[in-house]
Image (tube, rainbow, N blue to C red):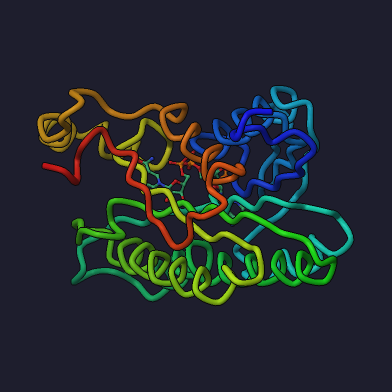
Length: 241
Ligand code: NAP
C-alpha cells in the first residue's frame, strides 16, 4: 500500500465548504479517507465531491467541537476554518480582534484538544494539520488580528507537537502562500496590491486551492509519521525570495 494512502482513515476538515478546505477534503477522500466536511455554512457541495458526510460546526464558539470527536473514531483533523478582517491598525476594533482570534486560534486549540482527548481515550494515533499562513512568519499589513492569530498558530503547532508526539499524535501545519479564495478577494480586487503580490511570487502565479491539498494528504498520511511540529510552506516560493 502507498505510504500516502488514507484508506480506512476518518478525517474531519473544518471550513470545508469552500476554498482550501474543500480542496483538502477532496484530496483526502481521493487518498482513501472517509471525510467529514464541517462548516458553519453548508458543506453539501463538498460532500457531493468526497462521498462523505457533513457536519454543522460554527467555530465562532471556540468550544463548538468539544463533543464532536468522542466515539467517532476520527484519525485526522484539519484545522482549516479561518477568517480575516482588514483595517489600518490605528482604526482596528476590538470586535475584529476577538472574532479573528476566536476562530483562527482559540477554536483551533480547543478543537485539537477535543480531538486528542478522543484519540488518547481509545488508545489510537492521530494526525493534526493546522492551516497557518505566510503571516505566521511575516507581518503583513492592515491585518493585525490575522497576523497575531497565525503567528500564534505556528507556536501552538510546535507546542502541541512537543506534548503529543509521544502519544502518537502528529501535529503539523501548512503555510499557504497567496491563494485564489474568498480570503484574498479584496487583495485581488485591488489592481496595485494584486500586481505587487504577483510580481513577488517566484512561481509566477497565485496559488489555487488544489495546490495546497497534496501537502495536506502528505501530513495526514503514514509518510509523515516522523514529522512533528513542521510548518510546511506551500507558497510558490514566496518565503524563499
Ligand atoms: P475561504 O474560502 O474563506 O475559506 C474559509 C472557510 O472557513 C470557509 O469555508 C468558511 O465558511 C470557514 N469558516 C469561517 N468562519 C467559520 C466559523 N466560525 N466556523 C466554521 N467555519 C468557518 O478562504 P480560504 O483561503 O480557503 O481559507 C482557508 C484557510 O486558509 C484559512 O485558515 C486561511 O486563513 C488560510 N489561508 C488562506 C490563504 C489564501 O491566500 N487564501 C493563505 C494562507 C492561509 P463560510 O463559507 O461560512 O464563511
